[in-house]
Structures are given as structure tokens and as C-alpha cells.
Image (cartoon, rainbow, N blue to C red; front, top):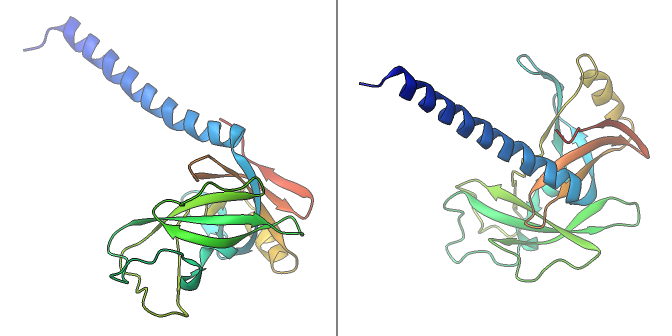
Length: 194
């Protein structure tokens, strides 16, 4: 049986472990936002409301659907059998938006050039990779952006009229964090570091 003193020490140790874990998660996100390579992607809205968390926009990008012909190393079994990592190489266009140029399952064979960037995502199990005209839909973890209450519907309606973008920060390993929602040259909402 535990004494009162041991119980207090155990509770303190447990609290420190929890605080350390949360600090590690927050610090990792902040490091990507602070030091990551910045890219701008065009977006298209899907849905503006979550009953539990408020207004948000589900985002679709040029990189949300990757044609199979763009993937350089399709596996011999031709079906994604598990939660597979995909790396998509982006290149900056003349309009300032970054677009996909090629992709690989697993890791990129060469590092990205100075005018390129790699973003990594996950491809769910079960995609049929045999059809040459087919596409896959990776999940990059940047498909939702939460907005202040009451502003989601107005922004979604504006997105149907003119192009909006998302400014991302990419870590060296391809992990992405949303930095800001932009309307042309105007930053509408910027994510805080912490």
C-alpha cells in the first residue's frame, strides 16, 4: 500500500510527464511554423461549420488529388496495402502558388532543390494503383482551418468568387503546418506560434 508521501511524489511525476509531452507537441509545431520553408497553395472550400469546434473550412488543394502517372515508384503489387507515406515535390509557379511536379511512395530519392519543397502525407489503405488515369488522395494534416465564430460562411462564399490561398510552413522532413489564410496579398488569419 502506498503512503501519502509516495502518492504525492507519483502524482507530481505523472503531472510532469504530461506537461512535458504536451510541451513537446506544442514546441514541435512551433518549430515548424518558425523555421519551416514557406509555400503558398491555392485552396477550394468544402464545408464551413463544426457544431463542437465552430467555424472552419475544409480545404482542398492541387495536391489533394495526385495522378498516378505523377508517382515515380508505384509498387509492384499495384494496391496500397497499408497506411503508406507519400512525398510530393512542389515547385513555385509564376503566380506565386506552389504546384506538384512529382511524387514518391516512401522517401524522395533526392533532396529538393532551392526552388522546390517536399510535403509528406499519408495514403490510406486500399487505393487501386493499376488504372493509369486514376488519382489518389493523400492526407497531409492541413485539410481544415478553424476561423473565428461567424466568419466561416462569409469566407467560403468569397472563395467561390476569387482565389484564396494557404501559406504553409514545411519542415525539412516534409511535415506541414498552416501558417495563414490569405486572400490575394492580404493575410486574413495568421496562426500563432503557441
